[in-house]
Image (cartoon, rainbow, N blue to C red; front, side, top):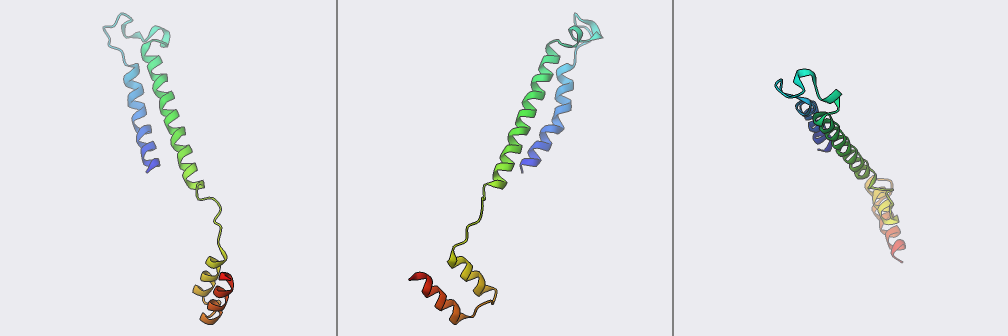
Length: 104
């Protein structure tokens, strides 16, 4: 889901950058550009790029946090006993005896 959002952001980045830098040919600067490349369009382009990079970093941090949030799985003795019984390692009588030992 997050990666899908990030790919959408990076798909719209080039058109946004181009439209931010576009100038009309009848502007006071002519068709030559923006005050040596650093006019309003150029500043807006850098702002858009910085915002998109910030959003990308934010989503990457969220993804890494969600993957690492499980933490170490701590199994209780009861859980281990149930797994051993479910796998067939111990039989019903052994399971009941050990379960009784755990409760006391």
